[in-house]
Length: 358
Image (tube, rainbow, N blue to C red; front, side, top):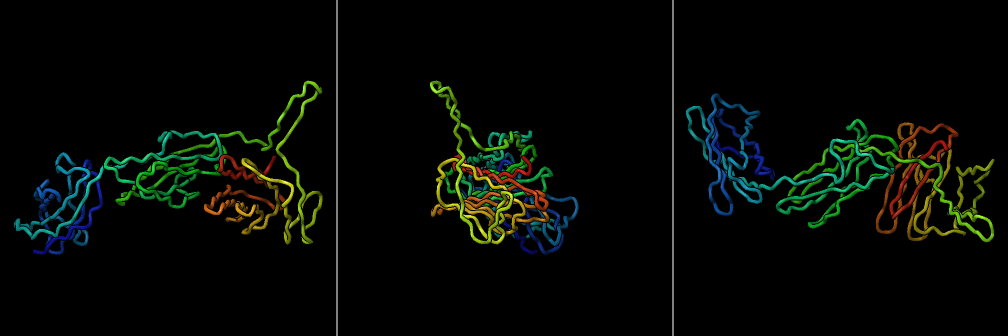
C-alpha cells in the first residue's frame, strides 16, 4: 500500500482542534490511524484509529482527518508536535505511516476595535475617526502587520484601503485615522492583520456613522471688551495677502482664471500651528496638481481627479520624512459650478472637506 502524505498544517488553537488534509493515491480507504507526538518529550499525546462504515472517497485522492480539541487530544497551546497518519483498506490492512509533519498550537488572539460596539452604529462627532486596535495573545506572539479598510453602507464596496502597517514585538499603539467621512453617512471599518507566526486576525466589519455640525466658515472671531473706550475690539485669524501672477492669468468679476498660468503667494504671511487652507474653484483641471504650498521643508499639494464623471481631490503633505495622503469624497460637479475645498490642520492631523453650497 502507498504511503499517505499529510499536507502542511497551519498554526491553530488547541482549544478548538483542526481538520487537516492528506493525500493517498492507492485504493479507497476504509479507516484512518492518527498519532501525535510531543516534540519536547517524545510522548504520544493522541492516538486513534477510526473505521468508516463505507469506503471514503476523497476528491482527487485528497482526504480529511480530524485533530480533536484539547479535552480529547491533550494538545496544549504554546507547544509543538508531530503528526503521522496511516490508512486501512477494506480488509483493515494498514499502510505505512506518513512522514512526520510538524504542527504548533497557539491561543486565538484577541483582535478588535477599542471603544466600539460590535452590533451598534457607533456615532462619531467629526469627519475623521482615530481607530484603535486591541491585540492580545496569551503566549506573547506579536503582531507583524495589519491593514485598515473602509467600506460603504453595503458592506461590500471598499472605499479606501490603508498601506500595510508593520509592527515590532512589543508595540502597543495600533491605530489608524479614517479621514474625510461624509456627514450622516453609514460606513463600515475593518482591520485585517497577520501575526509573527502567519496567523490571520480579523476584526470583522464594524459600523460607524459620522454626525457633526457643518459650519459655513472656519474663521474664529476674537472679541475683546474695552470698557474705558466704550467699544468691543474684534479680531480674526484671517490674513489678507497679495499674489503674483504671470501673463497667462486673467481676473474677471473677482474670479481668477489660471488655466495656462499660476498665482503665487510668497510674502506677507506665516502659517504656524492650526490652520485652514480654503480654496473656491470652478472647472478645475482634472488629473493634475491645482494648488501647492511649501516653506522649503514641508510641502502641501492639492490634486484634482475624475472618476466616472465624478470629481474628487487628493491632499498630500510631505515633511521630508513621512507623506500624509487624504482623499475627499466624490461629487458631481457641473460646468461653472463652484466647490469650496477646506484643508484643515489640527494637532498635526489633516481634514479634507468639500462644500458645494454655502
